[in-house]
Length: 302
Length: 60
Image (cartoon, rainbow over all chains, first blue to last red):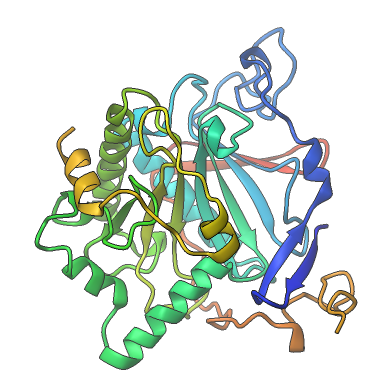
């Protein structure tokens, strides 16, 4: 298992998992471990010749056994596809998978947080190009989520309201809204730290995937597809991104948390990336050379 | 002060979140509800030769 080391200055856990150094690195497409096993070819992670959606334990996990889990979610058997290219119906199936995994992993005795995410694109550090996401079941609440929960708890104590509901209410002048329907909203938050960062959130207060009803799911699936298609239209290329689902922690607590999905594409133009450098890495202070109002207008218009 | 000997999971007596080594937690892990039921899909679990699980989610 991994070793967790406490960072006394930042008061957060660092996970040490040296075996991950040997993980599969950019295999050729005909040796993709996330494709179904084709007749006459070597067995992949998925021995059957086809699948709808498949989930398996990561071969090189950061957390396993009593510590937690790391899972790989294969969205589709089609190697050359992407999440945004799936049908709304298929994405609704995927939402059900994410919800089922969140529930099951959240019941493991030492798991304190279940994090659903996707890394897309080589510049993000993706080592397998097959469309897939990941789920980490952590033995602690990760620091970004913890800070969010603390801010939300303070706001709730002070005002009696949900912080994120107030953030959404503050977007009603439409300047930073990318699109919305009666259930979900996509917007570039005023406090965005990445040029084309977008938050996708249920307008009504929901704590996590488990709190969504069927109509929420459908709207979520449609919104997710719309946003990812806009991203790929932005620079006329598959836009790299990190997709981060911020759900409430497992159990009965965290009711003040508002579920939302954050997207961080690293591109500031087609061929220029925003790098995390001295200010961001060394001091934790993001400096952004784009206005949320401008990037929202750009995304709205495509 | 050397934090390494006690503030690692290797040296902690149980989980790293026990006792004084705790990172602050926001909620107690208390479950009372039944596990969620999936509606749109069926689920088939296969154990791989190395002990890892693989779950096929299929259209119901």
